[in-house]
Length: 157
Image 1 (cartoon, rainbow, N blue to C red):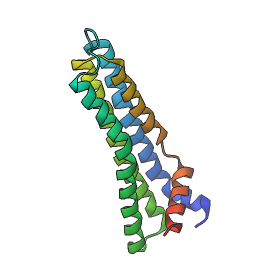
Image 2 (tube, rainbow, N blue to C red):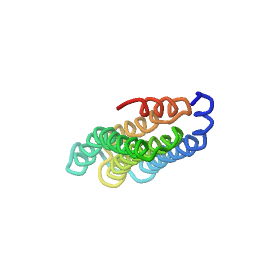
Image 3 (cartoon, rainbow, N blue to C red):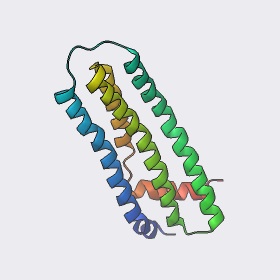
């Protein structure tokens, strides 16, 4: 399939993925503002149990978002091969893998921000939430990137 045809065929799916990506970045950003300006009171308590759990969850999310989305993508590619569908249908597998990775990091960011705002305003929790948001922002899909992913996934065995 020529490059222009593939990119045209997947454009709408990519735009949906872009909207979802922005939304899953903006949610934690809004909560960060609320947690910082409204909720967080008192002094940081260092690394209490809640902070450690939230930080460990953030580290686990960093690893899991790649592993889980990779497994989901592999299954999507395998199903695509078995179905005999056209190449643009692979964009759906990319969309699903992206949403899963984004959701894992968003959940970790929310946990850090809730612990920050309600229990312990330690800056490490804000830093972990910011890292999760940055990881999500780095996954912002482009038409060219998704088209390349589709081609590479279709060519791999």
